[in-house]
Length: 625
Image (cartoon, rainbow, N blue to C red; front, side, top):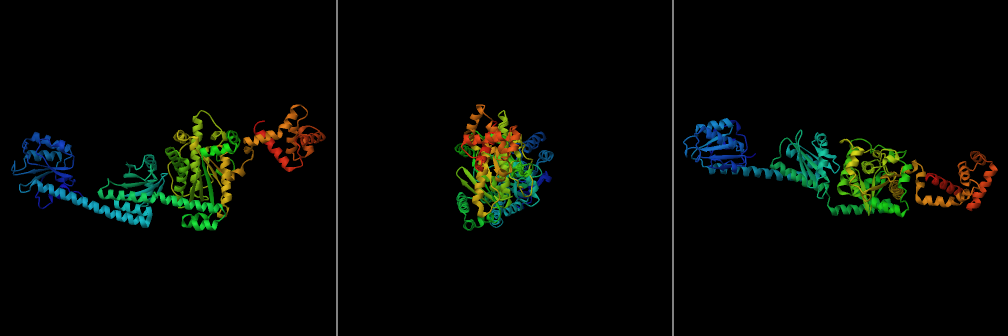
């Protein structure tokens, strides 16, 4: 504790006597200052004990003393020491009455006590207090370091809460509470999610003070431009010097635990890439040996393979596959985002607190760094860390490969992130003045329902999710085609089937790219219809080439071969039923089918030929011909 007027009065060597303000002696003294100026206020900072002999004051003038004392109180002076036996043999009554009226403690200083002795006593007490604070700070640092080595972040938080006589909480990059101490503080910390998100949007390092039930300090954690986590410290009053040392030590230790060194992250990524290559090569035993404790748990249960691609790479790949210009047509007739009977109809990205947090974090973070691919990796890793899951994240150029526990928090986070980008894209399209093939309106379903049918899992809840309009407004100006994301999600797989899972994810990614979707699950491909895939330009070109000769024949008015072929194929080659549909005799239909064979140079007895002709007819129907 810093020195107080009471401690000075009780100092046996000073022999001070209280003449006024005896009920206010518990105030701390920041310094002892001597001034004989008639108006020393311009040189005061507040918290001083002012020492005078009234050399230039008429201390017996009641009016002058009232003005003098009133100005001292207004400047924050905590006490007045008056030396007797110098200019006045005793403390003038006018000064005593003025001090008593203003509540200013007035101390009588005997002649044998020099002002220097009082200054030395104050200085020594301040130095002792600072030494105690530094010593306590070092002790707290040792305890926090011990807890960091043995108990991890939870141990650091518990030790910090004890040091500051309050509570402490750790948040991840999405603003979710990772840990809190004591346990009762988790609910209090959960109410600060919005404040943590605002802190996250500021360049690191950043801090803020939040009022309310108690005084809460928020500090960002991390060494990069964007914070990877945040620390909240709640106390009943402002932190003292020792408590401040403890908080700074906790910030350093928690930064070390949440911000791993670049070399360590690079080494882990190399191990992850090696494990993935072994799994793709069909060597699960070798992969498990290399994975060790880092990824070994991931290989003990079914997992999903997530394949993500940046918008620029996806567009380039679509052009190389001849898919440019087909997005709008295929989306209009394809499954909606999260719609249909596929797994995308799950509720992971629907309404709810955790979904809202992922949505808000995805939008804000992608808008901040303009790199959804890197942000997807961060969101997935954060979700896995919070749930205690193993996750393998391997960057591959403009792609990202992720192995995550099936039904776990990482897969749910991926769906939520994709849903947030889908919402922003739809809102941007609406803001541009119309409905496009990539918007949710074109597919007839709410984009917020995107994402795999898995539960986010885990306890806790957060703030209400962003609405589609609010999400779009937050991200409409943040995304360009190059900054968008396309994700393909495989079905559940095991270590021996990673190659097949990768192929499934690639197929889902290709469909997502063609349909203008952010995320498609492989299960969706078999749940809907193949017809939307026929809108591809290459398929259209094939259909036009295959049927052109028949159309040219029909154009001369010598028979309706295309309609006859469609009716015959739709009736599985049943002559009577197909002829009845056309309103012609079955012999007429037989003649027309022989003409089809002659013109095409193909036999309708070949099932492959019938299949190709039927797909060509469906492709032209899908194109509106």
